[in-house]
Image (cartoon, rainbow, N blue to C red; front, side):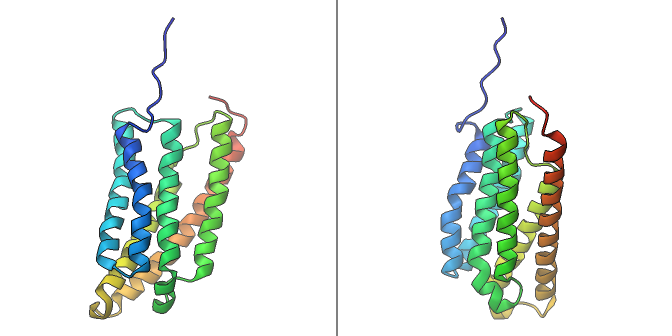
Length: 195
């Protein structure tokens, strides 16, 4: 009789990196709210790097797990949405982020998280795919530009930053909506599968 190895738990390095991203969100949000832009940028850099690194290590070390498929996107959502909510006051002053935009993103994340949870409950692996990765890259870019813009303040060079930031926010919204539709289609197609 063969035994299957147990799935990696919280002690695996990829899952620990995801957990660290989750835990970094509170000081990140505090730094944004306090307008400590240098600290916010440093914490956001950690969030961005570990988002890429945990998935790369999980694939390289064959440590993919149901826990990782839930923890990784959960950490992303908490960090991204927390950052965006806290950026709204600065974004409204700067004219690049409105509350309705964040509300739209929050709604999308609730729907996709519900779909992911239901599919995993049915035994169908439903981790992030290419559309979610494109959405995350767009979010990382938009939030990075927003933090850099606020950090530079009045010393920022001309209007190029405002134009790039404005475009990145609209690209972020489009990518989030497109990936939400994609996940909905995938859940519909795969609803009868079992692992």
